[in-house]
Length: 536
Image (cartoon, rainbow, N blue to C red; front, side, top):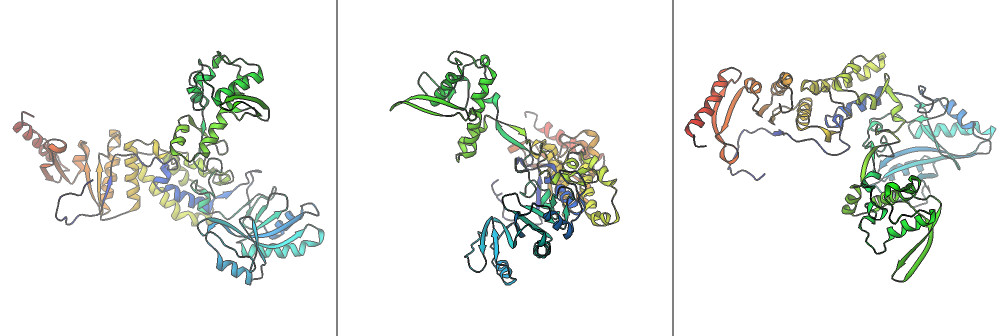
């Protein structure tokens, strides 16, 4: 908006507008993240969450050094291993001082992002703007019966420098991370120390690697690229070039005719719905390793080559991921639909993170519950003495914020619900509850019809919330036509006489609007205006 044409304004508090607009359309925003309740829940799971093995489904306890050594010695004799100390895991920086310190401690080699360097000899340059993995090479061993003493010493050294973690790099196999913190006694699956970022779907440490924490995948939809199956392949397949084919030759036409010739299917005048399903799948999803003899006419004459056919859908998916043009990306997305991620089933987090529970529920199961049920569940948690002491303040803050949402009539929402799917009234009341939770004072809040979309029986809840904001030491200016809200106000101001450019005048003002006199003043102002402006 343009700056108002005024010389000075005195006595105006810092203002926050809570208007009727939906919250962020970002697919990563949920009710939990917008209200910041999810941050406290992540902290709760990091502090008192109980890890269970995702493979064996048994409770994971901390591993001792003896158990780690026993597991390593179970490897076949003659297996070559490296004992590594993971000193940096997914952090940005140059780590120059740390590397110099490790050299003074007697370490000779270090592995940075998979590359091995000699400390003190190689010129090690690390991009401080990127996240890195730095592992000290403590020892190199071959599994034999007489290496137990040396292996134990090496593992202890690694645990000392890497916060109770040691990485065993088995040559030719997947490395195994052991921890004195959490590890499965049966299959050896290890957890690193639980941290809040592990429970965040906006952080690579916790996000599902398939959908990157969004919970769904965008894929080319067969029904969108073939909207009309009564047409032929030449003019029925969208986004692949065939929808614009005329009588002349095109690459798409060449592909379809060559595949039809290879499998003995006549496609020229045949409707898509009359084609065999197995043949249509070859067109849509490719021929795999089976090679096709392709032939097409170009300006240089007839060209021939032999190759497998990638398929219409895989080709479009590849083009979408490879293109750098925003216009082309939006074009391909016209033929895509959202489907739940097959790896996390929409939970957004890694499987091992979902195996950490409080009580009987993991963090996704908890946030999938309605707000009133979450509050009941947390209030009835059975915790031991240590867990109760650790979680007391966290649970208090969570329950307080959940109660604020219930006070504005949003107890039916789930914390996992996408913020973009909220109505304007819901989004406004969520922001209102968030402001109460922030505990600001001396602020001027401007609310635009907060009762919109609210059932009349919940008006008292909303009014109690507004009064709570006022009692914290704030001023509330509410634009409203609801009768109950006007009665509850400390002061009522009627603006008119008309709307927009025809208004802007104070028609009436009365203190102590919490009585029936307020109603008389309000309607008197309107009546007087109508009487003197009968032509309007």
